[in-house]
Amino acid sequence: HDPAPPEAFTLTPIGRIVSDYPDKFGIPRQPGLAPEARGRLELLAPFDDPLTVRGLEDVSHLWLTFLFHRSPERWTPLVRPPRLGGNARIGVFATRSTHRPNRLGLSLVELAGIDTRNGVCLHLRGHDLVDGTPVLDIKPYLPWAESPPAARAGFAPAPPVRLPVRFSDRAAGQLAERADGESLHRLIAQVLAQDPRPAYRRGAEARRYGVPLRDVDVRFRAVADADGGGVALEVLE
Ligand code: SAM
Image 1 (tube, protein in one colour):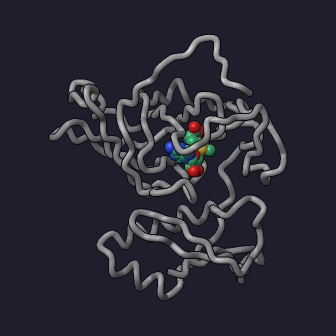
Image 2 (cartoon, protein in one colour; image 1 turned 90 degrees about the vertical axis):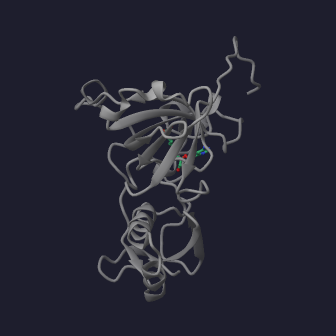
């Protein structure tokens, strides 16, 4: 698919994300799945005029349109959603895949605060954006218009199943020494419960993984879950 659009537009980022997620790996696949995820949207000149956000203080949630800047420009008509095990193919426009024409992303995020002391900085919670993501637009979420009770969501009708997450004594001790230990503990638990491993890795395995969160590399592995007969993720350090 050679890019030959009938007409091209130029978009200018209005801001950039500073995120708890330094890397794509491990980020939940939709916003709201890790409510503890913190981030800031720092507006860029000339959009950083406090007038642009006047009235936003009464809004709880925002739609962010952004660029999947860490995805390739290459796209294909069919993609393999991790939700379907990574094998079944489905039309790109039937998915929220990051590999899509124009690379536009759309996330509903909680607005936790607004700081206009030095430019404009919006404090966000529960987002799914990697550090440095260019944001193209902000709009207030309208629950009465944008949450139809009878909506159907195709192959992803409900939130993904969560895995149990355990912390080794070593990991718990390391968290206890940090000022943000409790918040980081919650963030790790929420992120790992989504099972960041590739879709084809389902069971317990010896392999160790690392997910970067804030300034730490969280090491974990999959272990047999004594309670349910399934798999749990254990945070090693
Ligand atoms: N909620 C958005 C949407 O529906 O357009 C994103 C959904 S996409 C399936 C979520 C994944 O995008 C995350 O798991 C993360 O790995 C990835 N991601 C987040 N920010 C990105 C960026 N700037 N460039 C490329 N991938 C990104």
